[in-house]
Length: 101
Image 1: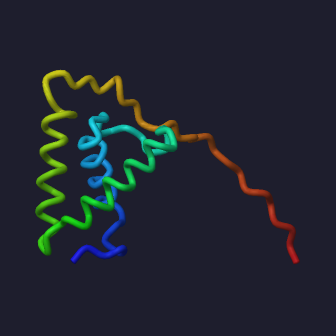
Image 2: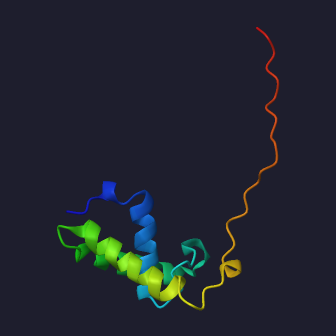
């Protein structure tokens, strides 16, 4: 059975792709960029999806995730340059020097 502890890491990311695809949004849509009413619809869809999961939920999630990726992301129309990674600050940060005691 699916538990809150299972809702972490890769599983959470896969669920987001699955639900975005079911909502007819691009599977790589960022949840934070959605409008409030869309976030509510997403959460309702996610809850319904989780409630309908079988006891062997890992296989179901992986299968649905792979289908969404193959159908909507990695198809002949895929252009990687349209999906840039998040900007990460790689500047060196110096820590303040501690005074000796």
